[in-house]
Image 1 (tube, rainbow, N blue to C red):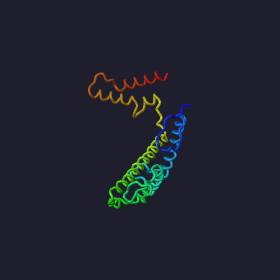
Image 2: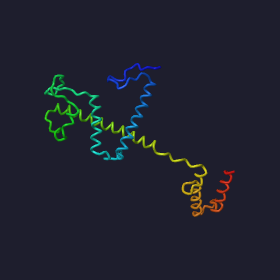
Image 3: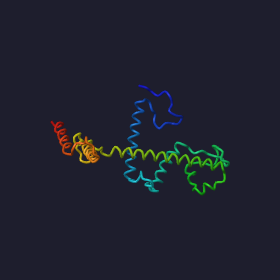
Image 4: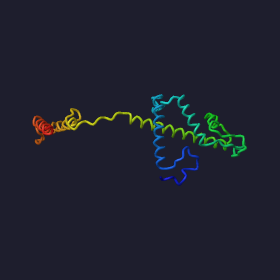
Length: 205
């Protein structure tokens, strides 16, 4: 059994990967979980993939869920009154605090250091939400592809003789055009039909 010899990252992992076999299993499991999430989202919000198809209520609920995980990944930092990192400071820059400012109120913040810190949090979370929504949408699209029945492939003879898309339809149209242009090599309609019948009869023997 091949075991990992290098750490994946400096962050505490959600799960411990002990081998490539385990990595493959966890990948498959995560894919199935995302499928379940995709089914829930599209079932309870059929317009999830449409532009503006997610209601404000659902969007807010999604952001609340993403916010829980984002904050777990990026613990809030304490700052002094001058907005310098300080474990004994009184300003805790949580995601909720950064988002509590309306766009107008945020623009009115006069401390450039504070504004820069909160902007970094707001921008990073916005990107995080966009990426995670994208994951769900891609899973829904993949789910949609697998749920649609595949168009059956026509039998060869059905393909040849289809009255709309069959090969003989094109040949007959080409013969007619050639005849109208005075092409002496074009067979008559009767002769061509005889050749088609003979071809089909031979294949059906």
